[in-house]
Structures are given as C-alpha cells and as structure tokens.
Length: 76
Image (cartoon, rainbow, N blue to C red; front, side, top):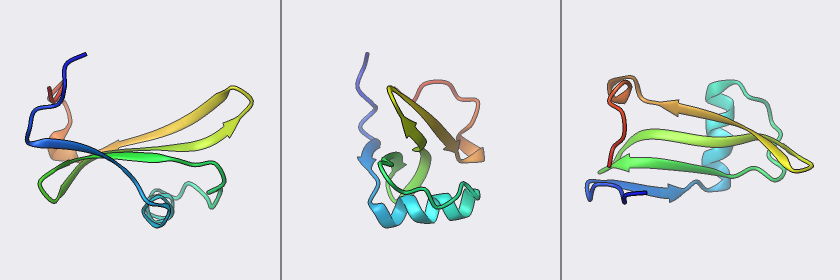
C-alpha cells in the first residue's frame, strides 16, 4: 500500500465529530464502541468512515465521500 499524497491527511474523529456525523447522516445514536476516521485536504473534509454497528467479530461501516471528490479513484 502506498502512503497518501502529502496534500491529504488521515485523522481519527473525536466522539463529538462522530455524533455530528451520525446526526447528519441519520444513522442513530449508537455511539458505544464507535470509531471514525476522515481524510482531509487542508481544512476540507474529503471523506469520512464511521463504524455503525460493532458486534461479535464484525462491524458495519458507513463511508461518505464529498461529491466533488467522488469517482477519482485512489488519492495516493
């Protein structure tokens, strides 16, 4: 796997950011055991990935990519 281009950064989302994401995407309030990461380009959020449900050895995730960044393939 190649590292991201230097203009992009991956960072973990804070609990408050995950809660705001869930509210915006209407995913519910199940914050227990959730984690999320986002890709940014400067101050712009390019994409976000949040675990929706975690149970047993499986997790369901939601991925959102800003419209103007879709269909471009890898950002590496």
